[in-house]
Image (tube, rainbow, N blue to C red; front, side, top):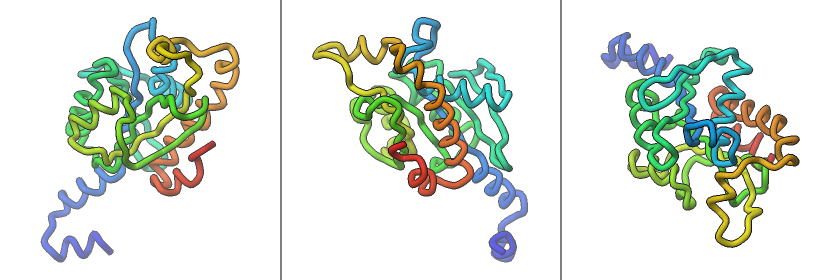
Length: 210
C-alpha cells in the first residue's frame, strides 16, 4: 500500500526499493581493542559476542577499512557485523564510516559494549543515553553528534578495588565467569537477532535484565 502511495506521489521505483533495502539492513558494532593480548578481556565483550554470532552463522570476518567486517542474512534482514580496528577510544570513526558506506539508518545501528554498572552477564538494551564514562561510547557520540543510538550493554560488574578499574576492564575473565560465559554469549546473540527481526522495543521487553 505504502509503495503504491509513494509511486502515486511521484517517487521512483528505484528510490522506493533503495529505501526498503536500507530499512532491512543493520549495522551491529562490537566494541573492543585489537590484538591478541586483549582477546579474552572484559573490555572486549563486544568483539566476543560478534565472534560467537558469526561462528554460529558460518560467517567469516574480513579485514577491511577501519575494522573486521562480515555480514549474514537472518530472515530477510542483512546484519553487517563490525569489529573496529581503531582501538576503543576512536570507535566512532569506524562506526560513522560504515554507517555512511552501507547507508544504514541510524535506527538500525546497534553498539555492543561492556558495562561496569551491571552485574556480570546482565543484558540491557537502550535506545539512548549518556556515555557513562565509557570512552568508546564517548567517541561514537562525538562522531555521530547524538546520544540517540541503540546500545546493548553487557554487564561485567564492578568487582575491583579502588584505583584498579583499568586493570579490571583490561583483565581476563575469571574461571567462574568463563564457566558461565558461553550461555551468556548464546543469549546475547539471540538478542542481536531479535533487534533486527522484532525491533528494539520488543527486544528490550524480552531480554533486558536477563
